[in-house]
Image (tube, rainbow, N blue to C red; front, side):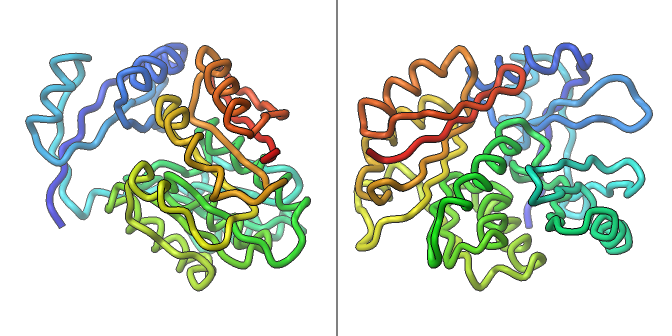
Length: 287
């Protein structure tokens, strides 16, 4: 594997929302890390070339670091790993330490443990968009009757597809344009023993959606930037069954009306909205 270059900047916790908004509006993929024993956070973007990283530095300040392959997956202390509770169904942990995962399982009977350590792929569960998508997915799963199928657009780490399989989906199709992220998604599917029920697909959603499948999906989830959501909504009609569940996220409260209006226009009236900070996730059914 090739080396990567990380642009990063230390920010105060109260600045996190402002920086996330700024980078989303600029269409910059990023991750935010809570640094152990430090008050500040680190916001980062990974680039294939040093020039790309230096361009970000010139725009936003911060610094550039060369990342070699063996450093791509940072070690997480099981004692400080973030734990997220999703409805009464899942515990999402940032650690993959076997003993820590087993302890979480013993402490939370009846909940499935999802282990998603930070990787160079979006979707550990800690970001509000991913967490709220998981909540809406659990709600949608309760309305399904077996067998059911889910399409996961912009799958990142694969967490939604893995969760869908754990919730009983017969098949999940996980679509991702970033090959590195798709590799992590495949690893996560294997690690959670559900890879046999997930089809991992490298594709550009704008290129694949005009060619609909023979059988539509029961659930479609898309955790993407607002501009891309608005562009793909007119293309989703033949991908989702009538009455099927649509889950959208990745947009800000300031963009919610535009996304909602487009969804309604395309036959997907949204009736559930989950907000966390400036981030929104929404769900509705195909009318």
